Length: 277
Image (cartoon, rainbow, N blue to C red; front, side):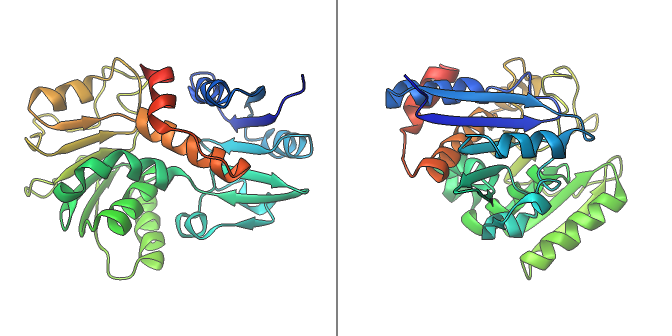
């Protein structure tokens, strides 16, 4: 029997990704055959590999780090959220045209729905200034009415670009940028979001926080990494915080992409249970 669904993913290092497992679960739930190509490409290889995949019989492609902006010139159209975030992580191949979307925002916001009241008109501390951090700020502001943001990262130039990009898209946002290692406001945030890889698969025992960082007890910690040995998630929970890892976001992103590519829905809880137990 031929595959009903043909999807794939391309990034710089995709070996650790759970995305193939998520789509395998989706195929099982929908009771259809499907394939998911998992491709790693160096920056020099990306354009050729991407075009090869897109020219085949594939219906949808996930785009991962560091190609979410690189891919945009190769697309025929991108949706308003991807335009606002200046990043594409989902490409729908339809009748030979390549349509770009951003599902980071959807996946991020999905995990926070039970905690909407805790976030309304609140403050956020965001670590990192890449595409995931931009999606986090955009989602918190747009869907949860978070009003004040402090964004901390290592590179002052990248932070400035990050601030200018968001202020072009969101007028009136209160956004303070801080170079990592300098002092951060003493006001305890309502949510702390780690959008860096620190604490993730390659550095589970490391931390992006300065020594002596005071966890805001009773608040929310969201770590976009989803490794099971994440010490930061454990530390946040140990002081009574609501701690969320990136697994819910990953499933939410995939389900949103599946809907874009096929027009069909699939139950989040069932997919999540099959992949993450």
